[in-house]
Image 1 (cartoon, one colour):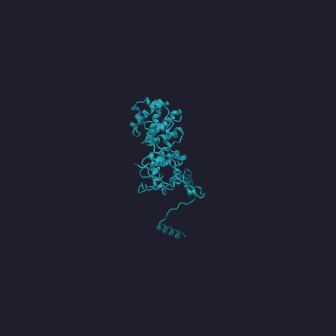
Image 2 (cartoon, rainbow, N blue to C red):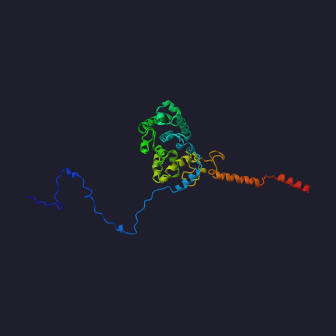
Length: 339
């Protein structure tokens, strides 16, 4: 005879059913909280989590602002902010901003600006571009980079905007990036220029290159989109709009893709990439790409002051002409004879 079964101290098991596999509720799984001894300790302070920032970025930014103070780079005169017709209706101006950004990809600002002038003379609206045949449109935008592909993108984008927004452009990054030929960089710049809204940093090849050279990224990035995300993690939002045109112009004039002019850069002592990509020999004095370190970024007032000082010296100081020893002896003999 089998011995009697002892009752389960925690109760009899339930037979298997469809509900047996249902997980326990969060309440029944909640564990008893143990009090930590230092919870009430007045001397205990929670650890602060500090966001990473490049060590010298503020000083480097001020130097870049100083080097860009004249605002005479191609982007300052022919960038997307300068390519639209200021007299056109608001929706047409916004459309022209988007078109100029689409054309600017892999294209110098000078070429983009020239193409936009021809487009504006032809009629740069979604409706007019749709009415233009591909061959004519290609001639208007040539020689921008990948002009054949851009003709296709312009026609497709114009058709979408004409149908959905009566020729205007979307007022969100999400709406812009779904248009053919429009990427994140163009979308953020369009939001800033066309809608006056800062949605993100517009990162092109210049911003991507310079950010990596300066060490402004926690880890090096391989593409502009990665650079944008890395910069937005630490760069104050109030600088997002300014940083694009600052670095683009700086990249066009000083921090060149090949042979950057580190010898005239004010950040040459703090930039971790200084002179690593520069020419071994400095260009000859007077070369358009070799301004002297002391005068490369002088303001107009400083130059005028220097000129005034030189003029004053010329008036007051006698000119000194070197005299050879032989001439000196002859002059001495003449004085003796005359005396």
